[in-house]
Length: 200
Image (cartoon, rainbow, N blue to C red; front, side, top):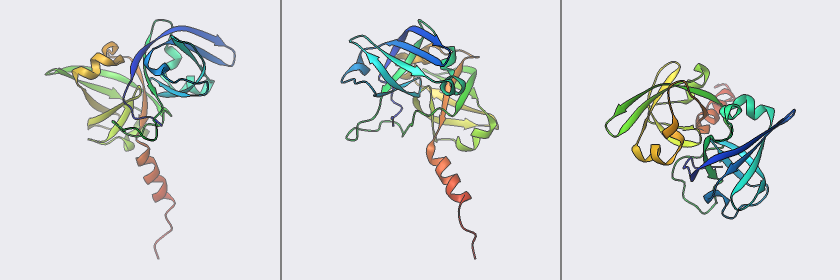
């Protein structure tokens, strides 16, 4: 479980492709504090397991399902990625509960300046839009964000200058694919209502 508050931006140092999956070597500093083999680190919002680490980098393995579901299939050496360690039970949740289980990808459709911020429009699968509501939460590349407006297959986010400066948002441009995780609460409510016994 994560909070959607990015701890640092790391750099992919190497990408090792094998018939059954991909290993990424990611250069980082902050997220290596207290690291252990088997720890979970969100890489652009995808919960991945540390399989090797040293003082300056760590390795994560990606199965074919991860590559199919996320934008990490496009990541290569030199690319920058958002990083967050899993939550401690005694820590603050600065964003919302993010599982690191990416639902799909979205595409940046437009970016418009708005004062010091940037209003960004994302195109998303229409079937996920029922979980994305104005002023609700969504995770984009692992960032906990508040939705501004929604449409049948789109939604907007207002990025403040700080978020752009300390995350991969500084590299965003129309046409880029991003990882999308909707708020799990909407899914649970929907499932509970589906399984509700008929009223007498």
